[in-house]
Image (cartoon, rainbow, N blue to C red; front, side):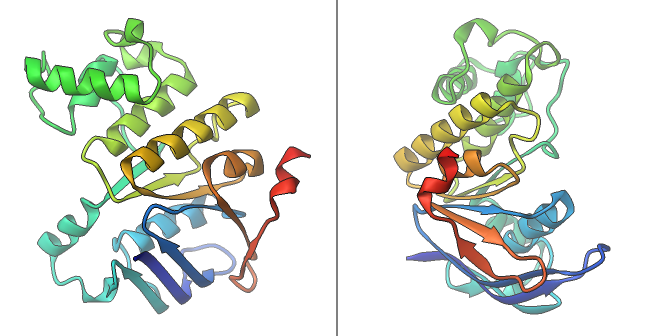
Length: 232
């Protein structure tokens, strides 16, 4: 089953040239990384594939349905529920604890969360590699890798079918980014979710995805990178 198809897409967004994407198809459970999209273009990609914005030309299809066919806000929200997004645009509440932030996909009653919700949040923390000792720490006090893992926990909380990463490791060092990429790939595989990662880091791309594509901004072509490249 194909969960995402992009064909001959162009979208203007205020840069010198529009974002162009020639052809892309992502199967259910597949992991794909796209290298070469700057931050603004990556944000537009996320908006296009979630149906938040429509292309100026071309077509984006989700689960066999064109995003142009999304009828209204209720329809769009049902579509977005099938995605989990890891991005520094996803707001964390720094004054709240790690567990409280991870509880928020389930309830806004987090001071403190009900026991059943707290247990779900703690299970998410373990799944994304957060040490139990920092569960009660304020998010403001944890390091960049732990914050990224909190965002991952929030993204997978409602069991999405597609996990999207938008320059998720920009604040991380090389080794931390690669370790995080391996963890994301393993978590997505266990959950049966597809992964689409926009990144500038080819080593992270090689860790998070089975298929790594390099974007040509002039043509929109996505060229597959051979696996040996990432060890250089």
